[in-house]
Length: 224
Ligand SMILES: O=C(CO)[C@H](O)[C@H](O)COP(=O)(O)O
Image (cartoon, rainbow, N blue to C red):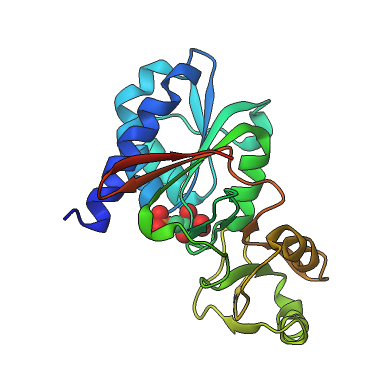
């Protein structure tokens, strides 16, 4: 039986193979955040002569990329990207996700929005029938924490402030448990519309294009 880390290693390596047809001399690769994304970065470094640079969704990933000799561009210098590769905390059969366990949800959503395709990489523990067992992270403007928390309670959620954590953008995170989502896209729109919410960790309106899932039986590719 493979450990979760071995599964993450497997999918990280598979992701580099998967994106190879999209690489080229002027290409920028979008890179996510988290332990699976870290392993992807490590494998990607072996192919750094096949693309120009990366755009990162966090300071953590930017540092790891740069440390391995991969140039990192500010997103404002990037016109487009063929792929964005990132992990997820939950993913359903429609390739809608909950992300932000690592707190990088806002930059992840921004970098992903510039890419032509979102390649989700995860081990099989992340695949769910219905999103919502994992608390939905909300990045919140500091003065709005209590107001947003009250609003979440009226929607039926149970918000908890992520203690001792501030995002790369300087904001706190509320993790909102208690939702079992029939319509994740509708909830994403509702949450993003609450004043003070920078963004929520639902990636449902713009789901992944493909998911590479490492299982005990081998690699599974999920498409809609
Ligand atoms: O959204 C994220 C970070 O904000 C990560 O992609 C998500 O938390 C999955 O992390 P890991 O690969 O460590 O399981």
